Length: 214
Image (tube, rainbow, N blue to C red):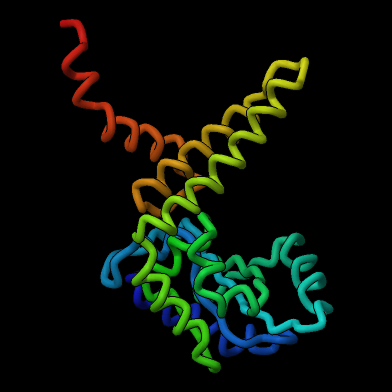
């Protein structure tokens, strides 16, 4: 199935189901589908991550929405696996808030909006796409990633126990995310170690080749 066909079916699901969520004001795509060209084949073993924007001025809706999401808010629709999450609309109509978020910003560099009755999501997406590569925002996102990694390393150093494999992978995941931010790439969780290797080789591959013993 082509990516544009997948997006059409996901939008169809949102218009039939997502609009019934209390506070719903729009939806957009995150994750791997945003890395594919419109006419590319989408691997259906992957799920499609959908975010419903929730207008929650009194902060009474999102806690329940998050609770539902943690209970694996997943659906199978027309052969497509959907994983549905929720975000506060206030944070999505602020382009600067998106631009400074390492995990959120890359998704808005492409046209990831599914439904947008208020047109606010589209307005944010256009600004983020234009400003994303500016040094100012890149440095802020890098600083955010470095702070997270620093806290993880401090916690590791303070522990008397040997790091578990999950801790090691978690730190590698964050390092991969840090380099992805610097290289203006989409961070990935499932392929983080592969992505980390590719980026390190891109940066130091020529050095390794020139110093390798024959």
